[in-house]
Amino acid sequence: MVDFGITCKCGHTDEIDEFMKTPSGIDLLPGNYQCPSCGVAWTLKLVGHAQVFSDGYVIPARREIVEINRTL
Image (cartoon, rainbow, N blue to C red):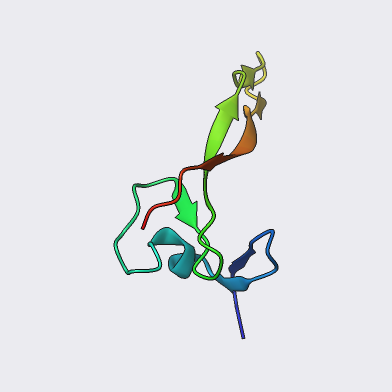
């Protein structure tokens, strides 16, 4: 059972820790992820800027998933 997991576009679901290292077991840089099943790697890119209002309300910047080169 997966308590907190990620599902890759290939359909593989696993714990987030399994997506934070290469299939060969090397730790990825923070913010990079790789599917242990198909090997597709991605990072989260911030798009735009956060909005801060005078009352302290904050709308964070939008995040976009960007596929990166596979790490072997």
